Amino acid sequence: MTPQRTICPPIDAEIAPVLPQIRQIVPRTDQANLAKVRTVVADGIPGISKPDLTAGGLVDVERRTVPGLNGAPDVGMVVLRPTTGSGPWPAIYHIHGGGMVAGTPETALDVFVPYVHEVGAVVTSVDYRLAPEHPHPAPIEDCYAGLLWLFENCETYGVDPDRVMIAGTSAGGGLAAAVALLARDRRGPALTHQILLAPMLDDRLTTPSSQMLVDEGVWDRDENAFGWTALLGEHRGGADVSAYAAPARADDLSGLPRTYLEVGSVETFRDEVVDYAMRLSQAGVSVDLHMWGGGVHGFDLQNPQAAISQAASATRDRFVRQALEP
Image (cartoon, rainbow, N blue to C red; front, side, top):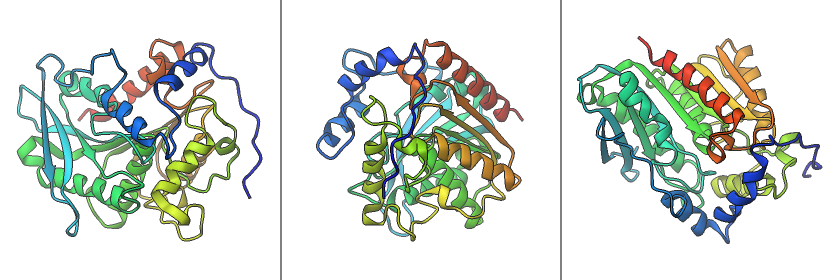
């Protein structure tokens, strides 16, 4: 039984006016609109130039493929490095968002570019296969394959293997959390931090926040159900879903890296993020949790000049810069 829709907090006054404009550009994420959603997410907003990932020549951008796991197809990667210096540098392993069904390794990657040329870091972003054409476990296995490749090639790219963190937004945040679990359980690469921004963690859709948004111009309960069903098919919400697909399913959260969690108060993922933070803390993991009042999914990208967006971006930036320090 689907829970009843619950009370929705007010949306921030600077964010609310832009939501109808966003919906005009990006249609609802469902099967009928999937091709258009993918095109808009990949190509960007018409009339607005794509961000310069080279930062005016300060960042080297390499696009390449790396081996998949156990005979799976090769995995695309984007690698950003400083054009000067030789390291060893810290690294951020980035996983893009898009509801498990859209996005490219360049999606929102520009947010991480300053860490390359201002701090001195390597940023890699993985081009994992998308659902529903490639359901679980294809996306998580691609993401893990990319992480293994990064650690195997630390010397080539000037990366300090003891200073690698993982980061992701939305679906990418869920995949980042799953990769951290997988690395722990497979005794794989050690990560210093996981940066989980509005992560997509729970396929069960039983929390109050998972039901409170209905056609609100952001990732609502129907879009969320579509994304999870694309990934898991008829197994969504069932008893046999793996924690590597939906990290909220994990019974044991001990031994995971220090975690930064961020979510808006008017967001489908709110309750599962807060619960994940609590359970991580109870398992002995150091957690920094930030819930931004009035924030919807992706609020900082929808109106970067809003006061709430400025505050969230500054808080996150300060944490990441400190985490990159030796």
